[in-house]
Length: 291
Ligand SMILES: Cc1cc2nc3c(=O)[nH]c(=O)nc-3n(C[C@H](O)[C@H](O)[C@H](O)COP(=O)(O)OP(=O)(O)OC[C@H]3O[C@@H](n4cnc5c(N)ncnc54)[C@H](O)[C@@H]3O)c2cc1C
Image 1 (cartoon, rainbow, N blue to C red):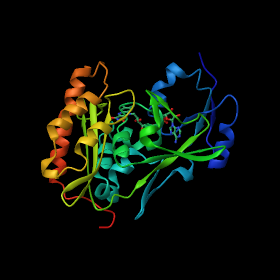
Image 2: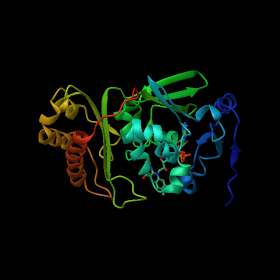
Image 3: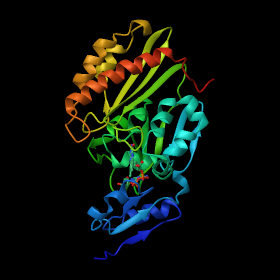
Image 4: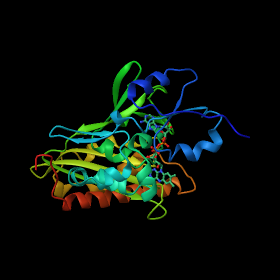
């Protein structure tokens, strides 16, 4: 059966927001790497598709002394290849480089990765570890959420259907900032995470002054591991209670059994990722927007 598809590709944000107010609402299309996979099951609901890929307002990477802004249409490959991001936020570059394979990375976008709200979304943990805010724009104006509060369940966010993700913003790493992203999948490429972990740590005088831990594929939403952070915060780097923290992280995770692994396996993997990640942190020199 041929289903009629309404398709619109506005050339500016104002026009897009006007269309999004119509009833029934349009479904937003960016790179299509998630949406097109869902197409055959969901085409009845996809009667009206709003292609946002021409919206210049959602494009661009701005790296400032205070803040970094990434437009929602930035692709995984653009994040992965950006030299400044590689230096400043290697955890984010590394995560973007693990998404699918080159074709998917060239097509899939940051905004789509976050809006799709998979617990395994690879960009969510590093961005949470970088203290990112997600910026939304809608017919009633703009608002933002801390990324660790944006996801409300598998496939669900606090975004309204008529709102577009404009981009993400996070403080430019300063001082002795160190970051790691680690992912375990069933293969080296084209693999959704069995478990992933991002660590963002700021060191001062040899002490872990601030730490943010974010995990993928071990809870219904990308998980910020606050109790584990508490164990590590304020400790001398060479005296980090790694085993206590790994044990706590395994408890803090809330994974499920699925075709990629059992809940028990995922928790064990996560504890090991923390051990490995902290080891890597100790060997890093730290990065800073201020040189
Ligand atoms: C073979 C394959 C391998 C993959 N491997 C990985 C992987 O390893 N890791 C990983 O994390 N993901 C992976 N993915 C998933 C996918 O590529 C990413 O989630 C991608 O970033 C989605 O972006 P998109 O632009 O293609 O989104 P789309 O498919 O266009 O949209 C996805 C969802 O987000 C909404 N949306 C898109 N942009 C916006 C916006 N700006 N504002 C509001 N809503 C928006 C859409 O309405 C839709 O609900 C894979 C996908 C495939 C097909």
